[in-house]
Length: 85
Image 1 (cartoon, helix red, strand yellow):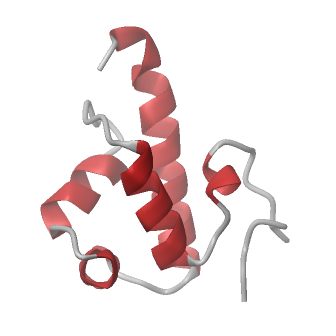
Image 2 (spheres, rainbow, N blue to C red):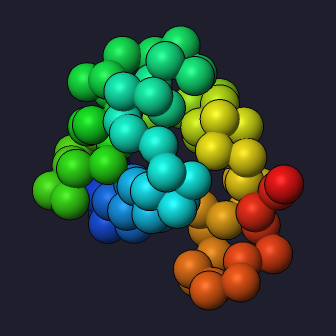
Image 3 (cartoon, rainbow, N blue to C red):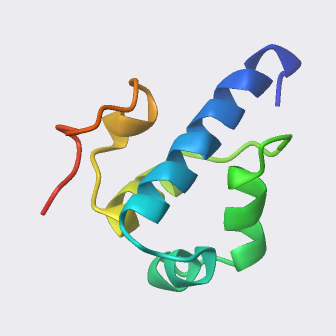
């Protein structure tokens, strides 16, 4: 990962954690839902993370959280238009 994008990965990780908690899921439940390790979810969400991840992974996470992938690139809104039922 390029150092200049580190803050962007961290911001996406923060949003993953936000939407996961909004859905009432633990890291373990999300990991199981999308068939990845808990460790990988934990590294993505960690505030001081230096983990990069693929677009495929982001699509999987969005699917598991039932949010549009755009939610990870836009400001968090209280009544988010990115949440799916």
